[in-house]
Length: 423
Ligand code: SF4
Image (cartoon, rainbow, N blue to C red; front, top):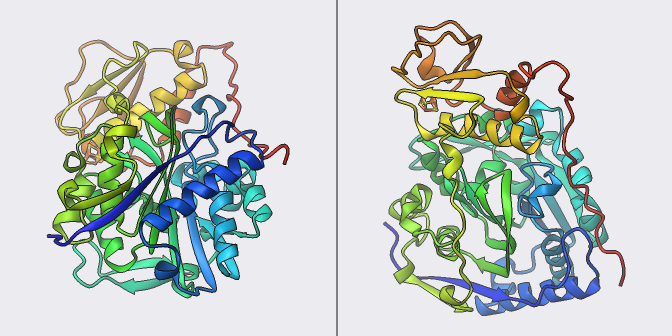
C-alpha cells in the first residue's frame, strides 16, 4: 500500500487552434503550459538532471480516423513543445519512441510508418528530436523483483540506455480498462508479441509488474483534447485545454480519472497500483497544484459500448460467461464498421462469446465463435480464438466478408496531420 503524498499539477491554457493546423501561437501557449506545470512540481532539473539522452513515449495506438477529431493520439502541439523544452534544457538526444500496436501490426504498419502517416514524425524532427520505432530495435530481459505474472520482462534497450524516460499519454476513456492515461500507456512498451499476453482481467497485474521495474521519471498528460466514449481508438473529442504533470504515474491516473468524472478507485489499474505500492492513487493523499480538479473537470462519456449486445441489429451477440475483454473486442469491431459506414450493409451475423453461451434456436448462416472460452460451443461457425482475440481488426475483416454484394469496401479517411501552417 502506498503511503506518503504525491504532487500533480494541472495547467489550463488559452488554446485557439487545432492539432491539424496550428501556428507558433498555440505552440508557445502549450510550451508555457508545460513549463508552468513542471515549475509547479519543482521543475525539470530535479527530475532529469543533466540527462543527455531522454526517451519520450507518446500515445500512437493508431493512425486515427479524421472523425475522431484529435482525440486518439498525443497532440502534436504537446509533443513539439515538450521536445523543444527538453532540447533547451540541454538534452542532446530526444528519442520519441513508440512500439507497434497489435492492430497496426495486423495491417503491416510499423511504428515508424505510423509516426510518418500521423504527422508526428514531422513535428518531432522540427523540434530537434528523433523518431524511434521499438519494433526495429532490441529488447533486453529485465528481472522483475516481486513480480506476480512475470519473472522478467523484455524492455526496449533504448529506454535502458537512456538517462530518463518520459511518458506523454492522452487523456482518454478505454473500453476495457475504463481509462487509458499513464499506467495503461505502459502496454506500449511491451514488444508486439508480448502485448497479446494477459490482455484480459489479468491486465492490471501486467501493468503493475512492468511498473515495478520501469517507471517513467515524468508523465505529461496531453489533455488539450480529451477522448470520451469508445477508447482507445474510436473516441469523440472533448475540449479540455489542459496539461497534467506528475512524477507519480498512479497519482496522475487518479487525478485524470477525476478530471473525466470517474472515481479513481473504480479503475482497477489505479486501485492495484495504489495497493501494490507503485504510487499514490488516493486523492486525499495527492497535492493538486495549479487548477483545481473541480474547476476544469468534465463528465466524459464512458465506454458503455464495450458490451456489444444490442449495439447493432445486424450483429446479434449471444454471450455466456464472457468477460469485458472479449465483449469489447466485438464492440470495437461494431464501432469500426459503423465508422466505415458498413454496418447497415452486413448480412445478419450471429456471435457466440464466453463459456456456456446460449445456442440460438434460429438457424444463422454466418456464425462466429469468438474467444477461447467459447471454443467448445455447440454450434457450427467460424472460430476466432484468443483470450481475448487480438487484434479487433481481424474480427472486422472476418465480418466484412459478409457485406451484401454490391457494397463498396472503402475505408474512411485517416488523419494525416499537416502541422503548423504559419509563424
Ligand atoms: S476468452 Fe474472452 S471471455 Fe474468456 S476469459 Fe478470455 S477474454 Fe474473457
